[in-house]
Length: 103
Image 1: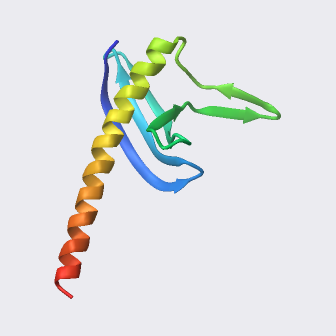
Image 2: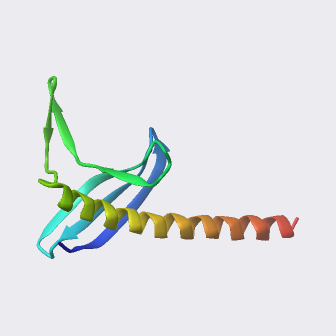
């Protein structure tokens, strides 16, 4: 399985949600509106799939049918999040140091 074209849109953290993601699976299927949440133990990210609530019932728009597929999607998105958020933290640290030096 190949997961490509992973895009991450960071959001202000709310209840563990830190971003929304999209990706392409096997060059044939676009998945969007995937929630990216921090794991409770802080060990990385987990993915939530979009649902719609109708009355008391929740309906899935789509989701992986097996663990292998779910893991491949989660790993690709987590890798992109790690890259994006690590770079963001480095930029923030550089900005704070420059600002502190100028004061």
